[in-house]
Image (cartoon, rainbow, N blue to C red; front, side):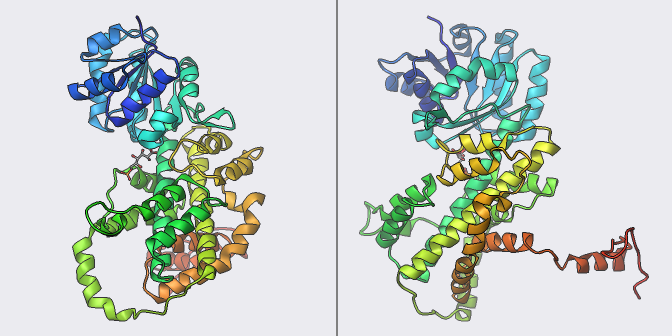
Length: 467
Ligand code: 6PG
């Protein structure tokens, strides 16, 4: 028997993705240098059309041509090593799909290199964690279009579905798939930090306990905040610890790790000159969280600065926090989409932003009811760059300004850090400012460096002998 689809890397993601492929009626083959992972696949796939083999030679021989090989291995050098190992065994026209979180620069390099070897390459974002991989992820393939046409039937079948539409589409040339996945992760960082700040405000301003907050997040999940991240937050809040009498969340160390995709989003946004301060703030907060000992020392030093203000209980606070969170979610998506719009032109990806919003509606970590509205905002408006101006969002953003201002005021009074949420409000206020004080910055630049400035009352470029 020959197999339709191959997977190299049988960690939890790879194994689950492959079982999903087999579920959908395709013959699925996997391999891994770790023998235990191969055994695990064979055990889990018992009775299904899926098989794990131990050598790459056997793996390649058992795949139907053109071979469709996905890699789900850790991003970085390992991807290159696996590709080099495969190359002598492959035929012209075979397809390699890198399904990991590779940096788009690496994907560009591999795409060009593999072209010279007559191998078709798809740099592909896969989102949804282990559960998504097993039941239906959101898939973002970019690169060789003819390769996409070959794997399209398989990927469309395994992807999550929303209203019958698969959460996968051809994203564009070269590294566009990995770029879009990276921005997905940047938005993911932003949303996660925003939820964390809302939790902190409810806890420290509203003095709500975990079970009350869990119920509140569940309630929010029924409304306009409906999303995977709000849903899991409700579950996390009520989870009890089996080792002690209390909630697990309360004993989890407050130092966040990161694998880099959020940081890369900020880096490329800086390179392209696109402001994404809510994503930057989320990356920064992970950075600050890592300085635990310094934070401990500082909290002892500065504790007296923020005396405990009285708790503000009741539905008013909950409603205002919900509104603030919704406002901030919209801004966070807006920043990510704006980055994609600018990158599309700059990096020649020719992205269809409506399509991106459509395939993020299901399967991925940032899936949310809001994405249907985002899809509508970009639908029929390919020129739209920043969705804060779209009919779908304009009025409600403006209306929510009062609530978020009030919530941030309550947090500021108590010294509760809200870097992400504050950045969302600041971003909105900065963009709706017809005049910013950056005339001062221009004057200073000209003062000390003769960098010149433009004027609002005359055309041309000017320099002044200031003193
Ligand atoms: C997904 C996730 C996933 C990512 C984790 C961890 O879409 O399924 O984005 O790809 O690896 O979220 O990322 P950090 O370790 O950087 O938080």
